[in-house]
Image 1 (cartoon, rainbow, N blue to C red):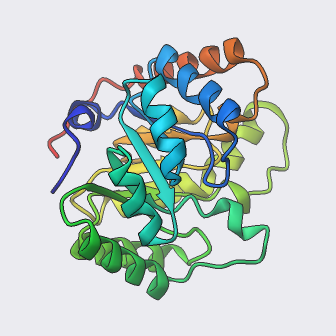
Image 2 (cartoon, rainbow, N blue to C red):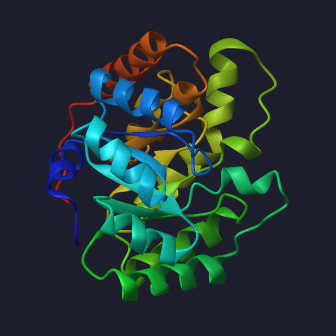
Amino acid sequence: MTIHPQLQKAFSTRRALKVISGLNNFDLSKVAAVVKAAEAGGATFVDIAADENLVRQVRQLIDLPICVSAVEPELLVLAVKAGADLIEIGNFDSFYAQGRRFEAPEVLALTQQTRQLLPNITLSVTVPHILPLDEQVQLAEALVVAGADIIQTEGGTSSRPTHAGIMGLIEKATPTLAAAYSISQAVPVPVLCASGLSSVTVPMAIAAGAAGVGVGSAINQLNDEVAMVAAVRSLVEALETNPIQVQI
């Protein structure tokens, strides 16, 4: 297993927090606001688009580990050369609205191609929520064999909450929570629960078996950096309600 050393403790205590600026967000001013808020608020690492120029700019702004996301392995290679610390195949949510689907064979092939190109860097792979839950588990197991160090779940875009308030937040998180539970029972690597989470449901993700969480829209959709910092701190505090240590 190749886990970035700065992430090792956060995963072992199940308090890892990844703040996601967006796979298709290439606006430096917006990305800068998100990553600076992530660092100020106490996040573990950030996840930005796999653009080499963006990576260089963000590297000058923060000391947190930088994860880059893409669905093209070649872009990940360029981003690593520019200074990215770890890589992610996933954050597929932005593609679903365009009718783009990611099936298990494609995700597995992308993982294998990426591992051949970048054999030594920490690799996270998202399991598409469009797959039935049993197929998500099967894919996760295959991804670990192919070299994935972290498995990320998703599901917020498929959820249609019928209630407002706290009940709605729980309903929205249900698909990714279910995936986190099922996958964490099946694989020996950390599971990062992402998509549709809030400070209400972050503790549920950890209780479900996740070693950390990834949060995007709950932070990057805010227009004020002070509000972003407050949102990150709220998530960090939610994670601290789970002082559970595990071996990874």
